[in-house]
Amino acid sequence: MRIAILGASGRTGGTLVDQALERGHEVVALVRIPAKTTVTGPGPDRRRSGRRASPSGRRA
Image (tube, rainbow, N blue to C red; front, top):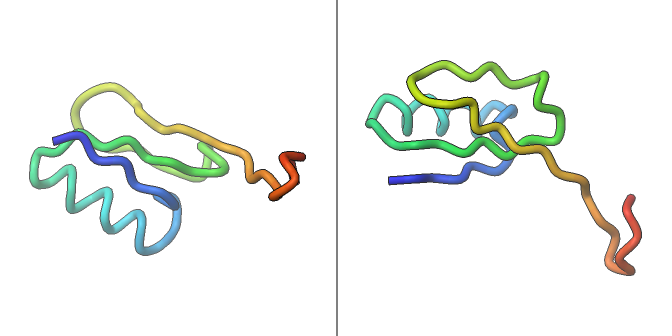
């Protein structure tokens, strides 16, 4: 199963990433700063970064 985890560089998100990989899932780690995240496990590096947007549509 492919799973996307938001906040994957945080404490809880990192734990979820590890557990999902141990169970054989494909993980897409969604993080603000990709360099803060260590990807271990088989397969390609699927870290994704994003920017927070304000309600008016302008980037914060």
